[in-house]
Image (cartoon, rainbow, N blue to C red; front, side, top):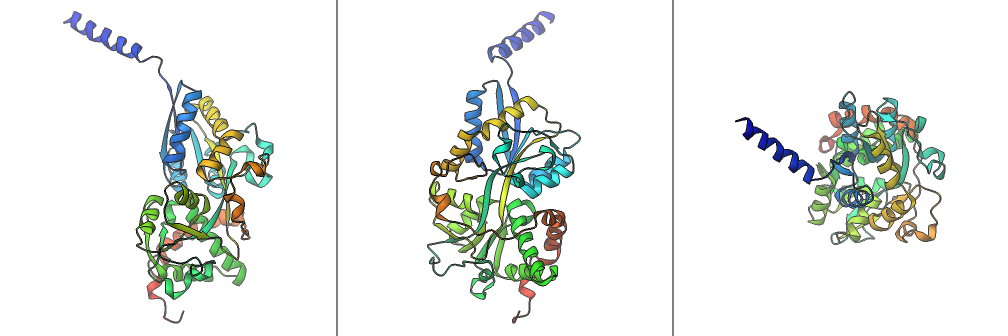
Length: 346
């Protein structure tokens, strides 16, 4: 019996040795999608063969909530992607590790977090997206208020805001715009109720959004410009978009190391790798991202970045970050699904 167990043990040791040294696992939480994440997993592992990159693709708000839940037992090493408002909220809750990247002086001051907690990687303008096989360019909405026109009733599909950092910022920016105009958040939530009246459904993730618009279940949505460009050029979806004429929220996407990262050295290496000048250029050219870095010559960037100039909507990002949670809770409890009960003349 002892000899039998010894044989099994020796076999297990031999099997482990035959697979070489154990790799360091590196867990990334990110909303950047499987195409970009898979590409940089492969490239990073090629240069760092002792590290095994693993990633979970989820909405930015889901990333924040997961890191918050795991704060006493961190699982992730790097958080890559999501609005600066969500990163800053995480920073205020001490969920992020301070790290100053080698390129820290290459971005504008407003594109970095308190105490080096996070740094900006991409700009993400928000757009009005439409299926060009269903709606002509000249007929599609070209500004936010046009989305409330009765002719779009039942013809808008939106990503569900609670799990989406992008949609949360869009909705909160529109509430804030109405507060600036009227001095009252009531006007902002009334605006969202009118949008709800025209909304056919809210979907759980970007994939469902693209599929439903492409299958002509409805022609209109709002989303971010880089992802729409990606769907147009890489997946050949029949999409087009308008940059809102009155101005649009322009997000800064961030990256950070999770406080208590199980593998901080590998996390720093991944952070620097995916934010290097060569990686940022690849992300711009192949994955339709708009770099925040100021040291990248404009003539090296793809033409689509300059083909659609954007007008920034004035946004008080500090106020938006402070009220985002309560405004989204109010939307979820008092606005979602209530648009059809508005008086006909509203």
